[in-house]
Length: 84
Image: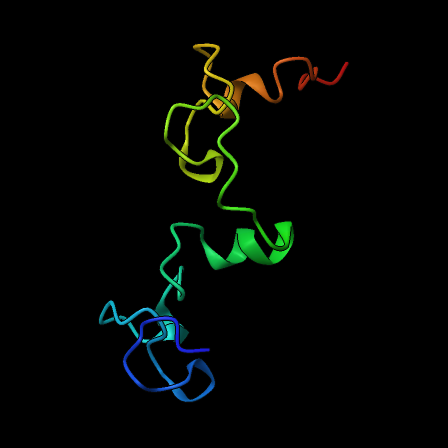
């Protein structure tokens, strides 16, 4: 695979997304907008999913169900974060 289409396969390329930041120092070394740390934990992400059909793929959409509540709040709104 050659993510940045520079003629160097990713395995031999020190900057897979050609953003000028060496992969060893790049928090998103493939340039997909998802930090490698999260991507490693989440596994493969289907970048074609657009749940609310607003033209913004869910992985980039701050409110992917378009309910007016940002996902970072809406997803865990039902969880009691205060321990008794």
